[in-house]
Image (tube, rainbow, N blue to C red; front, side):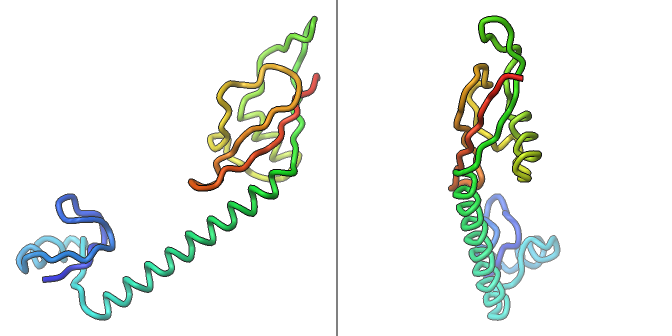
Length: 148
């Protein structure tokens, strides 16, 4: 019997695959536990429509991430930090502070976990921070650190 898997099944395959299994396994295991449905023409057409919709949504998300990355490229954020004698800084600027500054100055809500900062910023000046907007898209934001 041919079955369309609704969820990942360890020994059979991934969600959305059409697999050939014995009738007993399908009737007693897959169908009652809602792990799969019988591969009728209606169900096959539904699967094709669902896959097409998922691809369309994924493409829209990718395009939106690219547009946002282009928008961020021209923006800059100013963060202040306390400075002592000789230009030495007290502490550093972390992704949390950058995220809060982006929210207040630009109005964008960017998660601090998506910012890729190898080390906290410990000196005054301009730094480029890369932001993972999508698995395939990385944007860049200019962060200017000034004296408080």
